[in-house]
Length: 356
Image (tube, rainbow, N blue to C red):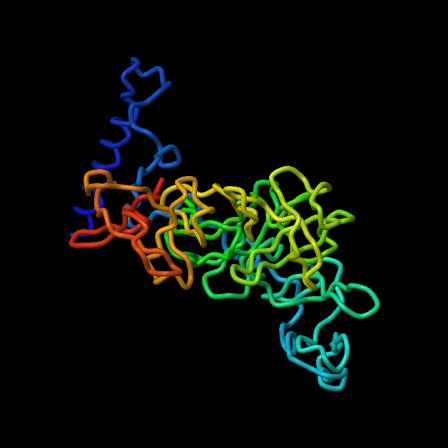
């Protein structure tokens, strides 16, 4: 049995040797149609669901680090009367005296990088001289990242000068933005956010430039805050006659202490706003003079303002989804005419008309 097996193996080996010599080139050697094991390339296909996305960071790389200054927010913004109230966090009580209702625990700063998350470097007035401290960020606070903006939903947007500012989401056609700003649809964020009408949160310091404090205005001007709308703008002081006021303004006793200041005018009357005939259809308004049409429709009873509308006679005079509705004078409730408003079955809001 063993001899038969050995003989069979010998015959098989001889056959394989002869086959290997038959190279197809007359036995002269050279190329072969059969690749050697070392030359063999095995083509494999990775299942589609196991492929690694091209933008996947390499192992150990978690992408850009979250924006942080490494400073804890603990203790910041606490109301205080002395430094002792801020003990434990190494903060100082910034107060202008016992009558200062806004004294708070914070730290001095030069820019936002000196502050913790949810805080930005802002000016605090009072005392011997203004000082810059870290405060809770609000609308128009300067920012570099969303995490610096405190209120829920706030984002850090870029103004027309390329600077970042904190902005909250808003509802178009409603007074959900501060006076002097409008509700704008941000395509990248797919939502509406407040933007300053001026383009930036601070202007050049001249007449009607937006401001936060007097130092934001040029010499001879003050930063006024309107009692009703809370709009802030730079206004020139005047001598009472009005001859020294810029064009389209009048001298009225409207300063913080009743002193004469230059106010904008509309239809021959001084008005408490620098946004005169600036707003188009569906933008929020406080008074008729804010609107290009001269019609501010008060959809919320007039207490908080409304949106700019247009005069109409029939529903067909209005955009689709709006009706021609009576509007009334805020002071004596008399009929003041008819304007387009989103009222009735199938009505659409101003959001539908302000989408890009």
